[in-house]
Length: 331
Image 1 (cartoon, rainbow, N blue to C red):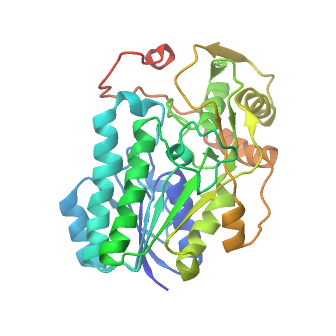
Image 2: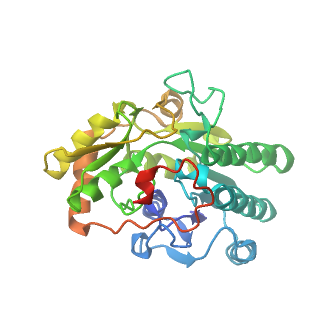
């Protein structure tokens, strides 16, 4: 069993990765600044270190003390749409912070660096479903930062021999999602609005299509990869196969929450209209695994959300550009 660092380990996806790894007997340290995660998300079998990946000194000290065998890097501010308006913050957190970790991984001989990227790297692809070979053309700073880290890992492999795995999940939802974040995770936003007696807000006509991925369908694959050297130095799309419109999603969320759909359409924003990916490659390496249906996943998340209740939706402090900022984010 290995000693593993999971950045963003108190967050939504990160805490599930931590849980999967400790169940396999690994010694896990979760690093998280708790800006979007919660300490009680972290498995009691793991150790939580509160701090930021942007703190190069802290990262150095942690690697020196722990001598990690593997790194799972999930820490990021993943508000793709908002990234247009917080460009400096986006690159400092999602790109420069990543470089602190990659430097340490090289210097301390990490066996494999597992990076959680995003299908945001593809941008408005003319090819659907998007495949790992699809040329990336990200159209927002979030996707640009993710692609830059992917490219840096490939360069580090060539120069220093650092093994890596890149996962590109998409539209992930489920238990422990921070439903109080108004800028990302549409399922959580819808459920939080329902709990507060508010209409579900949809940008534009709601005909945008996405495949919504249940958390417990993707994290077991991510946890398995460090024991599969044949999958190292590869890129994998991971998530659900069946796309739905955002309008259809709102109706399914309302059903899961036991309410009549109440939808408010607001002005369209600048976003990729259709985005969903192929998972043939991940199936070839990891085998075909049963996936939860959208209704099954939403039911599980709805039960958790009802138990924990609504969260206050805080405005992001530090907007750098207000021009063209969606009006609904100013409410």
